[in-house]
Each structure stands twice: as structure tokens, then as C-alpha cells.
Image (cartoon, rainbow, N blue to C red; front, side, top):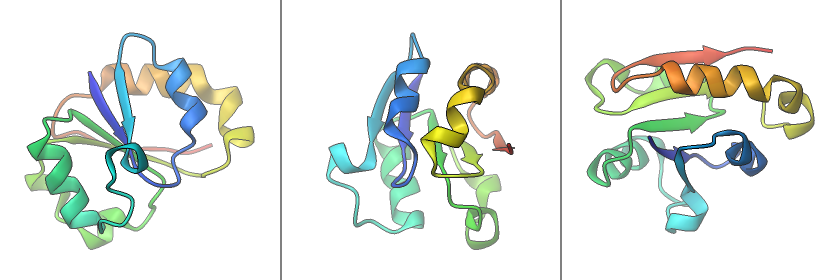
Length: 105
């Protein structure tokens, strides 16, 4: 799966997503793009999953019309997410285009 990490998504998580291709918004030069344009850019670049820590995204965007799955993590802290890396990877593996999930710790 082709995955894009939003700003704030802990980059070390990518090491736990074996078999997936992971980019960050920063690496793509998209760190200054706002959410709606960033989601559109991700769709245009054929990303299948967008991983973010933006808890308000579901209130700010119409996620039902998106052609990319969205996984919202509850924190930007890698230290807090690390113990759940396997569970996050399982959530990623289960996602399909159009899915919207929140991963709470």
C-alpha cells in the first residue's frame, strides 16, 4: 500500500509498516499544504492511505467523498504510540480506500 504521513505523524512508525511504501508530507515538499489540498494531492499521487494526528479532520473535511483511506492517530508522541506499533500496523493492513478510522490509545 502507498501511504502518506501527515505532519505530526511520527516517522519511526514507518519501520513497523513492512511491505508498504511510506512517504511523509515533508519529504514530498507538502508540509505547508493545508488539509483539503493535502488530501487532494495525496489522491492525485495515488496514495491509498493518509495517516494523520489531526483529531479535527473529520469535522473540517467531507471524508465520505475521499478516494484515500484515512487513519487518525490519537497522539503525535512516538514514545506513547510505540507500544501499539503492531496494532497500528494491523489497522493499516485492514484499511481499504474510502475507510476512515481513529486509533485511540
